[in-house]
Length: 299
Image (tube, rainbow, N blue to C red; front, side, top):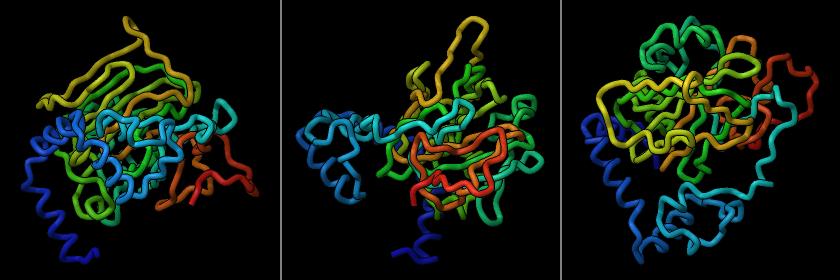
């Protein structure tokens, strides 16, 4: 049972734990082929109440490693895309932590905490300009969730930025207590040009998130580095992904931050604390109908 003392101790311990060493161990263990894999998967499914009926392969025996299970595919018919190519589709299954306007280059994290858009994107002012007074949505992926990330809109990749950092947990307790959490954790930001303007999808690492990968570059982290890495696309290497296409995946739970330009409007049904599913209508460039009966999220 959660208490203020236990929560405070949990967060305090994270400041001294060897984040990257723990994650490297998790990375290795989740790729072991062992007789212990199937019992581990079954225990995980039971503890976190994972709905295996949604998985393309429902039986734990179908997965040779724990990582294969954790990054499992879903039955495609269960995540239909919202109609309209200009409608932003939710990129992941998860829970909305926060969403709203980026106020003068600052993103709201939790009561009493915000962080810099420029810092989130690796410290480059010009990179952040397209989103300075735009919109953001922070979506938390719990251990039970589907861990593949999909394109909210069709877009051409312009830059990928890998920002080294810590690996604090991204669960709600830690988000409420660690200042600038998402600008401190290791992350991979993918920036796109779309028909409605710039779009950013930031994949934030966390404790036990032993790997972040994208479909165009494969594994981005690990290995852990100390310098910010920037890859430019479009001139010599072209990457264009349709709306709904897989763009990357996490190992273990983490967070995605979606960045949109000022002209976008979130669906009026969306709010912090709401459960969302990949493919649902999330935002669009025009105003939503005032009396819309459409439900954009499942609670």
